[in-house]
Length: 138
Image 1: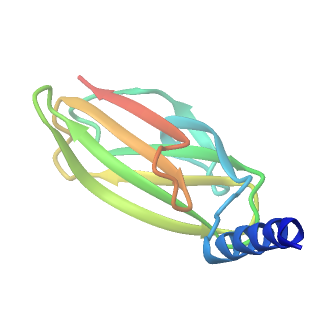
Image 2 (image 1 turned 180 degrees about the vertical axis):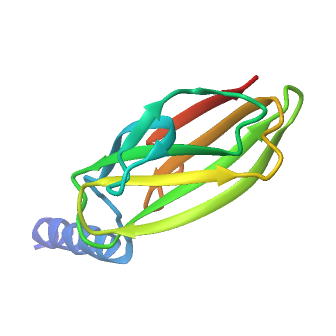
C-alpha cells in the first residue's frame, strides 16, 4: 500500500508546484533592428544608418517583430555612453497584437552629444534584450 501512495503524493506535489508558479513563455521576438534617419507611415526604416552627426536632431530605430500573440509588451530602453559612463535616457512600453514594424526615436533641439547610443528591445518581462541597436554620434 505504501508503494502505491508515494508516487501519487509525489505527482500531486508536482502538480501543486506547477500551478503555484507563473510562467511567461512567449514566442514573440524582435527579429531585426534598423537605426535610421526616418521611418515611413508603417514604421519601416528609411535611410538606414548607425552613424549620426552632432548636428542631427533626431534618430530613429525601427524594429521588426515576429510571432506576436495578443497583448505582447515591447519595452524599449534608450541608453547613452559618453565614453566613461552609461546613462539611462528613456524607457518606452508598447503593447502590440501582431507582428509588425515598430519604431522609437530620440530628438533634441541642438544636436546630439558625441558618444554611443543604445536602444534595447525587450519582450514582456525578459531580462535580456531580444535585440540592441547601437548608434554612434561623431
